[in-house]
Image (cartoon, rainbow, N blue to C red; front, side):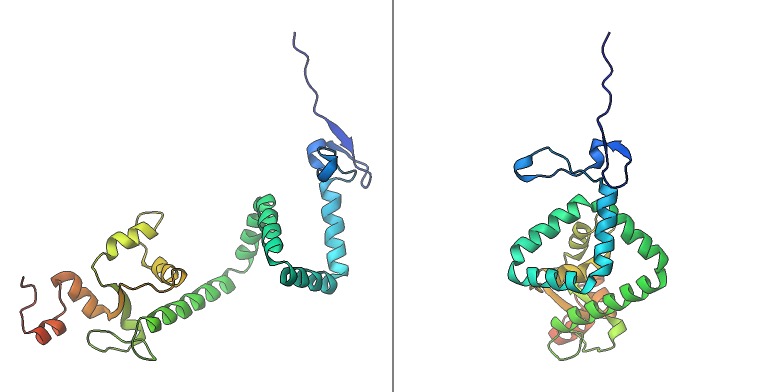
Length: 212
């Protein structure tokens, strides 16, 4: 008959509670698998207390470390986020649920700022303007794929496959505003999509809309 293996336990030197060994952080370094004498909960509480009592000095030290050793700071930040990913996601979710109106206002403002920046970068004037008819009303303007491959591009940007257009503006900025895009008003954009050529351009070229 196989002998049942009991879980390893350890007593915390701070709270005095007996807990599973997994509730104690590893010491690391040359000590390998050795565990700390105080449990994770006690260490976290002590860290929070120290931060609350020494907030200014802690932040100053972190800013100095970030400036003097940026690569090490990035590595530490990445490891810390990976190690505490579940706690971070839960904390962010709680904060968003408690401040829904603020989150909504901030998100909408950020989208408007980004949209204005992208439209301006793809216009030949200080303000966004349709490259076809010259329309400058902000609400009437949009980004057009010059090569008419917008549907496929938007689909590739959307994880759900629905081709959500709002993801286009962050993509353009993240990729340094690449060529192949222009600003059109919704009228010119729709006409270009339906007929292959906007009536404004048809007049300029003196050929009927939709003709080969």
